[in-house]
Length: 111
Image (cartoon, rainbow, N blue to C red; front, top):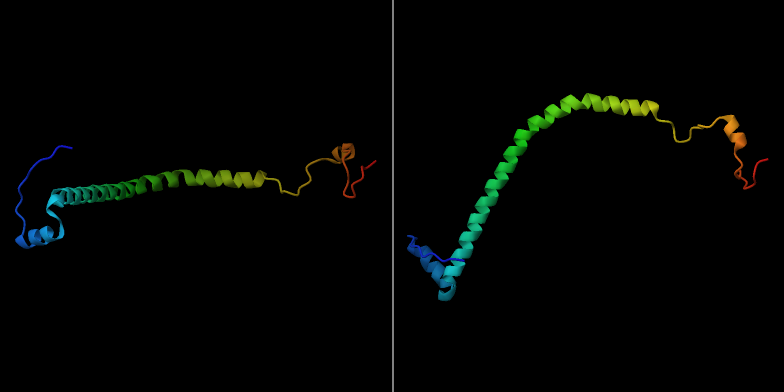
């Protein structure tokens, strides 16, 4: 990490409080850390605003897509419900039943 020396004008009261709170060998590192945190908070805040703005912009697109495809989705769902067989429906014919040789409810094989 390269180091750059800069001079800034700060209120004397702020400098006095800072110097009394931070030891002389740690002041530059403390200022660097504080400035890094401040820059990162600003970057994240800007990014969050951009995400929210993007979501607002996309809301119109999502709504348009929903309006376009919702009727098709409903039609598909209704079609599936009409074609769906009940879970307990008998689907085999009587001749299929007579060919079956598995055990009945009592555990014996029908003859």
